[in-house]
Length: 220
Image (cartoon, helix red, strand yellow):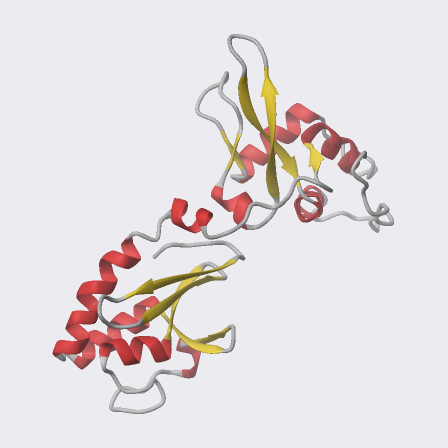
């Protein structure tokens, strides 16, 4: 099952000659809109029929009852009807195509205005007397967290799917000269990312945290 940490994405697929199926990725799990599954697969509503769905096995998302993808597939397999089999034949490859790139394309990248370069983030974090971290160490820390990745020592840092979908990091295109001009997507830490880094770096603190800083400006 495709996992996604603390983010929500809605993807819409259309079964040929039928109607739409909404796929939600919410709180690390994939869900299918229940009424659409029932209509496409020709199975009874979740609250009726021979197979009842436990109340803990569905979730309300955007006002719609939704099945976890495993429950939806199990209900269709249990029905064992031609309509349910046709739905399963269509939906299984559709769900397999919901990869990281598809999820990223379904979600907007946070803007860099109001966000901070890594060196500025390190200084803001170090304003707390219980945190002392520099730019290089902060890059390494975010790499260890799975927020940033790079193939080799000379390669650019890349924002991961985890950090992008949680809204912790964003990028700003920067033109780099030397050996041919190229564009580098410079990582920026968003305000939620700054708060999460501060939380992680001060976990288990013994003193009260300092008063929060004022709202950042574009020139901070």
